[in-house]
Amino acid sequence: MRNLFPVLFFVPCSLLAQFNGPESVEHDAEGQRYFVSNTGNSSINQRAYDGTVTPFVTNLPTAPYGLELKGDTLFACMSGSIRGYSTVDGVEVFNLNLGATFLNGITTDGAFLYATDFNVKKIFKVNVEELTYTTLVANTVTMPNGIVWDPAMDRLWVVNWGIDAKIKSYDRNTGAELSSFTTSLSYLDGVALDCQGRIIVSSWTPDRISRFENSFTQAPATILASGLDNPADLDYDTVNDRICVPNSGSNTVVIADVVDCTTGVKEQDGYGSFDIWPNPTNGLLNVGLELQAPVPFLVFNVRGTLVASGTLTPNGLLDISELAPGTYLVSVPQLRKSASVIRQ
Image 1 (cartoon, rainbow, N blue to C red):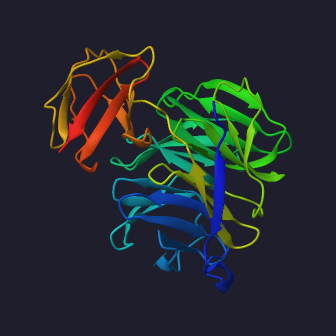
Image 2 (spheres, rainbow, N blue to C red):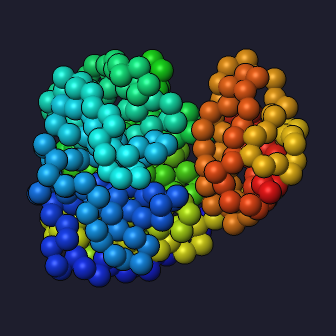
Image 3 (tube, rainbow, N blue to C red):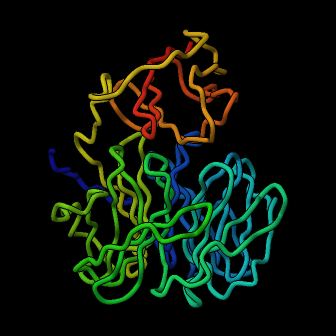
């Protein structure tokens, strides 16, 4: 398997103090921008693809930490609450107090939100539609920081704070710990998945972005080691193959192009096929799988880049109407089946 060879370029206006304690970056593919939370002045900025930085929301009641997009809402961890803001105009549309002490990382599986409480070592599960929450993990033992949902392996990956920090995974339904790996890195902050589902983490000691295979049978690869200063809650832009890193120590944001991050999934070795119709389609698809329970799916474009993910339900429809016209591969890793589809 080939290594990644990134080429760095920096946010051109970072020296003008457009970021103030940047903590989290979230890519918005539809809006062609990157959201950046600022803990220093309680605001969220938006950075366009061309590098232009403008305010998104300002004068927030408390500092925003982890960010996560779900639909047309940008959710932010803010002290003990999760707040949501319309991606159209920045108006607050969601506010739920979880009774937490320090919500830090946040992710979604497309249905629920999952957030880490750094201080009391918990993970919460939030039902956005019903404005309710439960404690998914009551005691993570180590201090949980960044969190990301892995649709292929159907688990939550969590990176932890501390010396020789651990990368753990949890069942999103029961909260059971599924795995734990001790790294030689210290003070892990953020975690994301690249286009092949490999685990990308940021560490403060050393200042580094590292990549792990999810089996942890190989030594980690160093993706970035320069231009970093306390790299925080990073994101991976699967549309443009970019690593997006907020430097909380230098008030900068690094956007790193990743060369040749492809999956080669035009034909997936060892995978069977399944029927999918109508094909071509305008968006809604019937899926010829006899499902007994929900299963995760992935959608790749012709470059092999992961462009969408979610969960298939028994007798449910697959909606790819938000994708641009083109040819895509729908993969169901748990069943080891895939199908090609043309989006008109």
